[in-house]
Image (cartoon, rainbow, N blue to C red):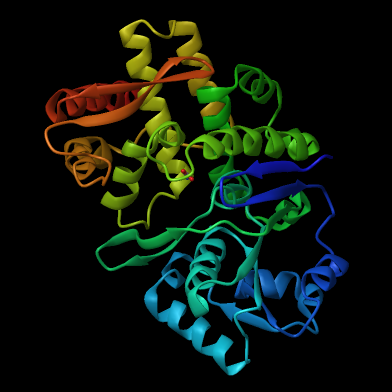
Amino acid sequence: MKALNMKLEDKSYDIHIKNGSVQRDLLKRLCITDDHVVLTDQNIHTIYGALFEGYNVIKIPAGEASKNIETYQSVVNQMIAKGITRNGVVIAIGGGVVGDLAGFVAATYMRGIKWVQIPTSLLAMVDSSVGGKVGINLEAGKNLVGAFYQPEAVYIDPEFLQTLPTREFSNGMAEVIKYGLGFDEVLFNKLEHYDKIDVMQDIEDIVKSCCAIKVNLVMVDERDTGIRSLLNFGHTIGHAVEHYYHYEKYLHGEGVAIGMAAMAKIAQEKGNLSMQAFKRVIKLIRKFDLPICLDDDRDKMSIQVVLEAVKVDKKIGHGGITWIALKRIGALEVSKGTLESTLVSFAGGLYANAKL
Ligand code: GLY
């Protein structure tokens, strides 16, 4: 399969997508001298142990809690102890946490060294490994310290997904659905015709379709000041849900699924989506075991509280909010409203879906 090329003003690089492409000989080609580190997490290291033998490996504990300043400092100290120079390279093998942290280490170690991304989760393959957003979390919030720092290359091997836990696979499918629903009606139709199991047969093509959409947006708006924000479809409510439950109850994709379902309801009420199209959206989200609303009575009661959390989303400016609305299946539009009208609208979407 031909690589996708990310052409940016300062740098161009390829995104390679191929089943079975990440083998030891790929690492051998990437780590031509000892001046390298392979950064991964404990889980990936345990499952794919042989892949790492003989390389300078740094392991971090699996999970979002590792995307912090202490782990960052520990990784940098280990790199100094290993004698990694400014000509060195960081190879990130893991999900979004490993990729974001490794990229931030690469962006800052000796004022910036080369790095390569090898994503192992579906979410990382279709979203976080593409586009150069790197960073760490602070106590005050997620991704509050970071950079735009593009890798030398991205190697996506969908065979890693064979060992991904089912819930994590669904987590990534939420972003895949986002690309179909928001940007590509053909992809949406294709997803509708799979059952949950046989989607894996075509996963290489599906991942490629998603990455191609993201590459095209990043190429025109690398710094996320305009059109790249369309990728945030479903994310304002999604982030609020994640934040409200302290990132413990809902995974990122689950929050986004709830957000997309609410946006679909709002679009249906506005007349942008027919009732039949709205039902197709809900059916597709449910097919991949993703939620369409908060999931118990106590949660339904707390929708107002979740909406309060929307206010802390960093995309909300003074006096108003810009959010990404559904125009039809396969197309999005930017919507603007006062904070109050937006919250009323979001609440309408969430309440209506809670009754489905
Ligand atoms: N995850 C959204 C972006 O990279 O812009």
